[in-house]
Image (cartoon, rainbow, N blue to C red; front, side, top):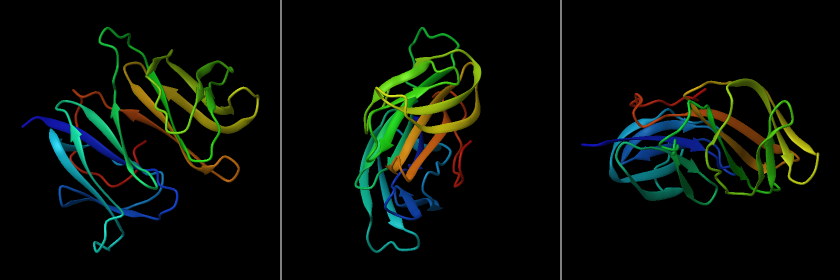
Length: 206
């Protein structure tokens, strides 16, 4: 059976911790906001994702069948009112060694935003809510990320220094309700489909 790599991201601002079931089996218990699991090995085709309050299976908060293709990797993003599925590592066939970077905007009341590096160079510009940018090749580097309101010099967020390594792909997730009091940024490596896939994990991925 063809394997698929699927991980779960808790990006729902209006709920607490979740229990997540995949195909009626407990996948992760007590997943907190902004946490992301490692990839699980699932069969290609249709898979059921169900989300419950911790310890309460009486009524699902979310329930959705996702259709996934073999030898691919996906991130299942738990949003306040739905489940949003993102395919990971959609890189060009004739690609360079990278690294590659993309920007995913889940800040509910956030403006269009730019992602800039420590020198002020713009990685991505004018990204709107619920948008997923294409991957972009960048130079290997140690950098601080900044989020800027598009069309202005207003900075919403500065990250710690982060190392972008060759032959890796990274996603920058921006989550929360408002840039004024509830903005969260998660920077995670994405897996190529040929890399090793973990079977189960309940903690954050660095």
